Image (cartoon, rainbow, N blue to C red; front, side, top):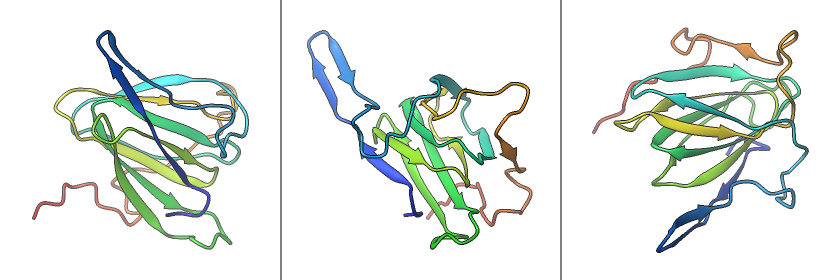
Length: 151
């Protein structure tokens, strides 16, 4: 796993009324601070990538559908510089992933219906000065092919 990335397995507690799943707590080992919470959706087959932050860490969980999350360590001097990690998260693998600043990340919706990702970043979004760098998901700057791997 890329240095500094943390994965928390989320516990789903079902009963006759429905279910409950805690996502993120102030006593989690990787909790830094609270900036805001937002929800983003992705349509089937769509790739939302690449994004990187200089200050902000992200704390994400996919709460509906499934996504393939891919991480690329762009931090100079990191012991895992240049490493790529991928994992599937969502209803069949309920996890929260902590993504430190400096890690490019993105995902592709794998489910037949829209996926829903909840993020609790450490910083509030600054509309005048966004802490976000973007790359084309298919541009080749990051050596990753978003095509499905059959076999």
